[in-house]
Image (cartoon, rainbow, N blue to C red; front, side, top):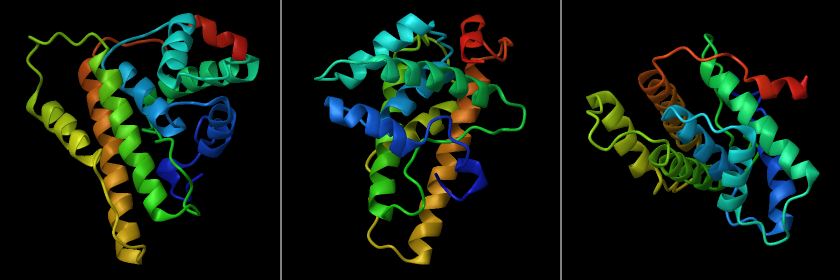
Length: 196
């Protein structure tokens, strides 16, 4: 996990989730999966556990199929991501490799996260004819650009630049969540009780 407080306490450690899904032939990474889920939630979609698990499994396209450990992890990811987005303390974190990972790998994962977010947001049911506020439209355009993010080096300046971009993405997601989730939603779904 990252040493930055904004990116710590990830609901499921990036590496742990990748270790669950990559050996099963996952088509997409943990970062892209988390982005896809957050895009759905930020767009106002509230898939139930069964629908979310099916969407996630379709997205991952696991060649080896899913077991109970994977489905439990997907349920936990959904519940805790929604909790973080709803938090009044802005405790939302991006699921990315930790700071001890190579900077270029973290940049790739951030691009994947943004790609997943745009995919999820696009399926959330936001009406095409709806007038999207300028700041929301700008955030979506910026995320589309960040999909192509590249890092040339690994200096302190490069690290700082990456952190700024990741923090921008985190705040953009929160802005979109607030914009498209005006109606208050419960902090935890009824089906989340099975985790406690």
